[in-house]
Length: 203
Image 1: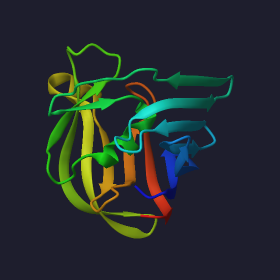
Image 2: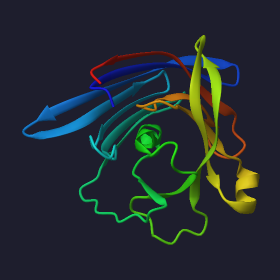
Image 3: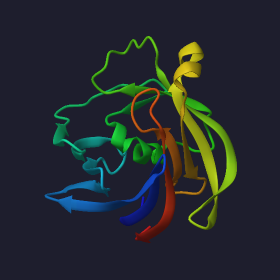
Image 4: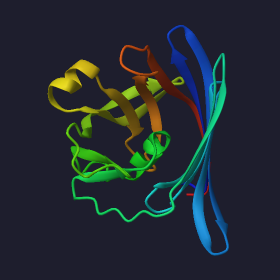
């Protein structure tokens, strides 16, 4: 991960489109380091602190805006000592997932089960992240060599509820180039994010 990175996306839900800006900064204080991630859009502002090695989110603050409300939700992980199996990835926050995924061993795995911090280890319908293929896609007027992955439930329920798709740059640091997810629960319109620009400082 670079010491500083700014990613600008165009987001679309149906006929509506808006800009999303995500900034990532490596910060240090009192002998501790973390990545500060801030994502801003007309619908929501998200601020997170991620572990600099595992990219696990230790805290987050989400401010959402809608026609009839403005809601702020905060989360802080006070203790986390998970012991994932070799085919598992511990997820702490949905908003942090596309960043946490950047640390996966790309090119060496085909799928991984997602385990959410605080949930029971026995999940009747576990979410799975699966590598679909490597492909070239166009975003923001540029061509990117990407890994395409999908997240969804396995079996019959996965077929009904559908899957979310993400494209990450094949080369390190594996930033997200495009995503296609539901804008809400089942039956809601698809929301797409497409990278328009990326600026970095440091490695």
